[in-house]
Image (tube, rainbow, N blue to C red):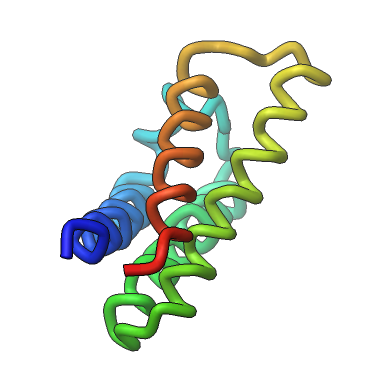
Amino acid sequence: MIIQIMHIIAAIATILTGLYSLIKPTAITAFTGLQPVGGRGITEIRSILGGVFIALGAVPLALDAPAAYLMLGITYLAIALVRGVSMVVDKSAVSSNIISLIVEVVFGIILVIPA
């Protein structure tokens, strides 16, 4: 029951992250370091950081299927793996990257645990 609640919280947090990126794409620049140039850059933030994250969080809630939560967890762990490697290779171990890495690992682990 606790794991199921944690799955739901992680999915909702994913949706909220996506909504924030969709609604306020230029507001995330300070945290992400992304600098959208013109309408094209803003569209990328809205569609990828907004739309994709909304879908990633909404699908597990809509389907209520263990495999959907598992896939979201695997996605978070894959993002964390690439972020971790990139932080070393690109020498980008700044606070926002560290915070993101921690959240991705925690959400990833929570979501791959069967409810």
